[in-house]
Length: 236
Figure: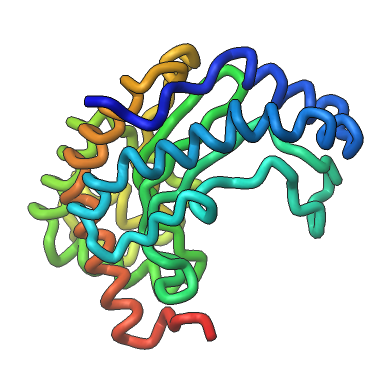
C-alpha cells in the first residue's frame, strides 16, 4: 500500500537536535522550512495514513493533522528550563479535546535515539480514576483480556505513580497492580530509530493499535461513565 508518510531521516532528527542546542530564534527561522518538511510534514502525513484504522476503532476520533502534531517551539510559560525548542516530537490520536477532556488516546513519539507508541489514559483526579478501578474490579476477565491484547500488540504496562492503600483488598491478584495505578499507559519503545525512516512504521502501528482495541474500548467506556456522572465536563 502506498502511504503519504515516507519517513523521518536521521539528518532531519540531527537538525532538530541542533536547533534545540542553539536555542536561537534566528537559527530556527533560518532552518524553519527544512525542519517543517523533514519533521512536521511527515508526522502530519502519519495522521492521514493511520486515519482509516483509527476511525474504525472510534468514529469520534478528531484527526486534524495540524492539531494532532506537537509544535517544534516550546511553550516556555511555567517551563523551568526556558528552552525555546524541543528535540522530541509527538502525535496524539484522540477525540476532540474540548468536547472530551481527559479521554484515552493513542500516541506516537520520537526522541533523538528512540521512538515509541501506545495507548494512554491520564486523569489527574482521584475520584475519576476510581471509576476506572471499579470497572476493572467488576469486570476482571474482560480487563485482563484487554491487558493481554496490549501485550500481543507489544505494549508494556506503565504507570507514573501508584496509591499505597488498597481499596479492593479482596481483588484477584492479577488485577491488584492496576487497582493501585494513578494513571495508565500501555507502551512500546524501540532504540532502532532508523525504523521511523520508512513507511513500514505505519503498518507496524496500524496492526498494534488495532490489536490493542479492547483496551481502548474499556478505557473509553470508563471515560463515558466519568462524563455521564459529571466528573468530567466539556470545556466551554
